[in-house]
Length: 312
Image (cartoon, rainbow, N blue to C red; front, side):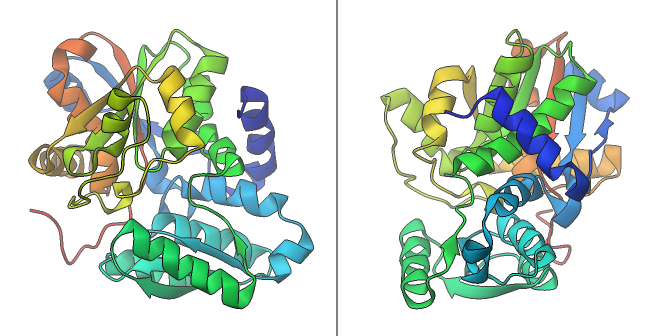
């Protein structure tokens, strides 16, 4: 299992290639929630999301032969863009298998960072089959978007920075999809301050992590019909045991709750955020009694939004 030592080493490795993102606060949202909220703004990160952390850590660990074969992955957008950026910096080539209903901004972000888009249907089986066929034809090196310890190490650096900046937090809320960010955050918290309670936030329309914890084994998503296009992946075999061991709770949210929180952040904080990260504010507002009077870190995972198709 990934350790804090691994995350510290990853942070040293990727520091020259990422931003140490700011943490913002907002008085009106504090008053509304009854808590002190600290927004870790990965929407200001390179390639527009936290994904550059894990992607850069993994690409830096690839040997030249692995890089020369080309790199392939599946992505709903942010991982693909981040991986393309990291690979391009090392003069390599990236192919990204993406659902055809991916927001255009995320497709353009992949292409702008040097990646080639390969289309698939918007379901897990199609993603995996198209990638498998691609790799069999090209011999490309696969960098999985979350089910890879190198990815978890990199994603854990966001939580590490947040805790270093605000060591007296009572809780941290992270979005959860494949689980790379949440599991990395859990390991950072356990290593730096185990008193901090870490929660996951997940759409009801793609609640496989919530259901998997309830059953004690990985359960497939019954639907991925959520506005949170970054939270449609299946929880991973590497990330699930970490989450199962350390997470306090998974808080599930409706589409309406997520959109309302996204709108609040845009209106009150004047920053561009995705539904996939506004879900962390939704979790606080839905569970006000749980977080009342607490210092709560919210990981704002990305800001790649299709401005031509906003959800309000």
